[in-house]
Image 1 (tube, rainbow, N blue to C red):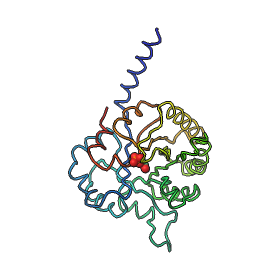
Image 2 (image 1 turned 120 degrees about the vertical axis):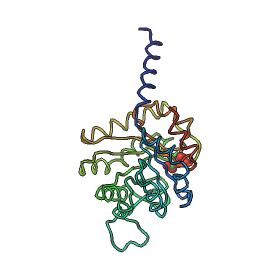
Image 3 (image 1 turned 30 degrees about the vertical axis):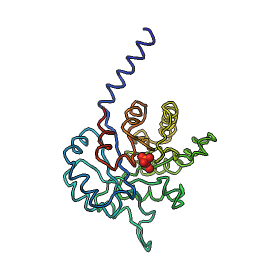
Length: 268
Ligand code: PGA
């Protein structure tokens, strides 16, 4: 068969499969959305969000304080609530901290850990992130573990060695807890909030590598979900969805309005 026909065929098959793939969309609202806006986001767009959640996993991550009102609004819904962080401790004298157990009680089923903003501004280490992950797993919350390299590391071609280190303790925990679902979000720091996104070739290479690197270290019973994060828009998401091993997106800025969030999810 001529190679151009083969290429078209491969593309058609991929687009066809994409229509049936259940993607994960995580809205990381950081400190940008107030409680009334969080509740309005859901209440004013209930129908569209529920329709999208039928085919996709949608996880909304507001600030801690907005979690109970959102949980109340989304009762009997297919939308999930995620937290943006949690304590590395089970309980105790840790003023200002929020434990994984209390998040679970509030209705949280997913939690972002190791976001680069926490690694940078709060000096979170891989060890602290592993402790948080352990607390989440004990509380039956699915962690969304963020990894990624700085621009300098990227330019020095250190990406894979940085990611290897960031993943080291996490894969051990996945084994220890026999986790059913392991969610890793690759977010190159130079792409977060900058409007810059990596090239398709670059992402293909990284996601292939991540997939092999992680699956060779975890049990076959653990389902690995790889997300991409960093300046995701509807225009970039439609392209990135064609990349093998990208199972979803962690979205910051573009998740704060329903219009852009919806267009990222519903572009198929
Ligand atoms: P961004 O943020 O989409 O605004 O780049 C992504 C993130 O920080 O998770």
